[in-house]
Image 1 (cartoon, rainbow, N blue to C red):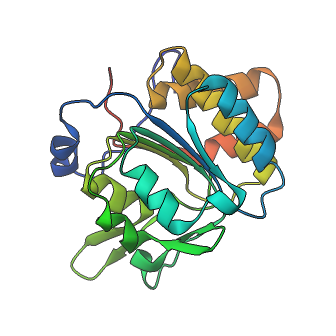
Image 2: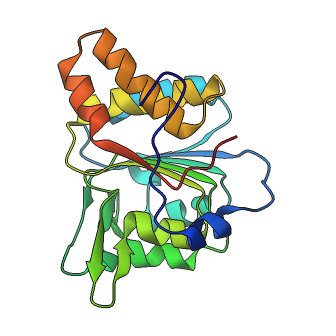
Length: 212
């Protein structure tokens, strides 16, 4: 991305249209799933950026609690291991404390966040089924009305994913749109010659973001 500009992927014109709507009051949710070595540091850093955020980590990060909180939030960050199933994308999962949150369960949300940042492995991927129907974590969230999704398209090391996430949120707190924030993260990693961070940031995509 060029200085001050970001690259976004818009799955369809219909999703762009559905993403338009009256904004809700800002409410931030941070979720940390199990078996992530750097989750605690990631949550701590995000707490500094969003002091009033609701945090669901450890035993609190259950499927029911996360789904309920997502329905009340405008910005959601989920740090969790994920599994993408090409054979059945709707059963792709985010791994939480008490088990997997399946993609199809997101359809139960009464309201959806405007912005979602996922640091789960391959959470941004989608599959194409017969009839060209696009499914997967990103596709379901966009179809439900999420305006902006930032997520990796391939497995990312926990530490690098956490660094990318914090850098993106820091840029967003400075007023940058998510796609521009992702571009800023890439440029910063290149400038600092952080090969691991460059690779991690390049693994992320910003889907159907709407500019300010």
